[in-house]
Image: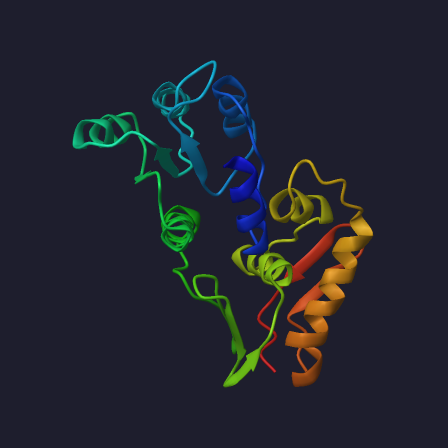
Length: 214
């Protein structure tokens, strides 16, 4: 199940890390700034209720979606009482899972709202649409993830390391020049045809998204 979800969510543009037991999951969720945690209740070493409870005790506020084969209102209530934000029972609809994950990311990720805007450039992470004014722009899932991270950090210089950590899985050995390739592709789609310069390079530091205003 973990491997299936990894492949499916990666195809949707998420960066996905897997922990196969409770203690490892607790460590990952404590040490890394994830946007959302999908937490199975029936885990070896430490069950999901305990993982969630300890995360909240350590003031980790990452949204948690409980995923379990158990059913019943008392199980759901226990999950929510330990600090979970949402709950899905197996078997579940993959479409519903993705929709709920995106909702949790929007709810816990930013104060800007679900649709990101810089000048006349808009990106809606919920449905994967990108536009420059009235022109629809086609982005790959990974290009969208990179652009979304930059837009959520508008006005702040973002390093290549930060982009890799947020957009790619921990298990992937990603060279920093791959980030340059994606940035170049995004600029070719969202800036160059429109005479804009939304994504600027700060030499020796990283990238900065600004309101070009032209």
